Image (tube, rainbow, N blue to C red; front, top):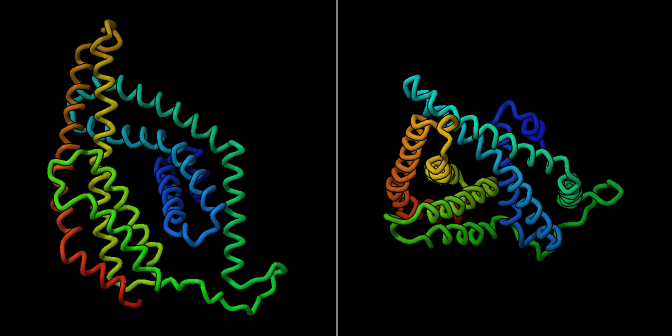
Length: 299
């Protein structure tokens, strides 16, 4: 997270903000996964303030994605059609600037500074305890307490609970809503992160399961990007259709916006309709057996 902080503040390379946002999501997933083994006070604080940080980064990243996808769409159009969408690009650049201003204000706030300080202090104290280092920096010979669980003993429960949340979406997802598919994406991501966090205690087949979950996550991510853009575009289209000022919103621009809205809606719908093939694999015998091997085979 800290590695991508400066780049996110600079804003020149939009992938910096993407990587920082992903890092925050991984931190949140780690706290959620290991919450039973963390001090309750630390876990509660980190969950709350990491969620707040994620929300501060989200809108600016959303406009980064929408602007990139708009640019790719415009690049395939004739020059006149490209020009018709310039008002939309200008509007989104302005919205991005506002979102970045709010993000930068948070990153300069006392709340974010305290979060970093508390996270660092927590990691330092946990690292010292794990390494067997006493308060004076000297190594200690104390063995782990007998009641402390071994990672390999906890793996089946940690992974099974997350896979069961994925399976709870049902045997078939044909015709389900995009909102439900987005919720499924989040649960697939949590299972994937759990596998990645625990990979040193897992066999080699864990990498195949991680790849399968990443494919599902990427597919649903593209669906959600198109869906989010279509919602923004529909609200804007309705506003522009009511506007009387044709100098700002000429007919060609309104038509071009409608065509882009239709494109985004079709892309979201196509991604949703094609996902059941991926879903059948994630819930099929092959993936289930692989997960069982992962949970029972030592590395």
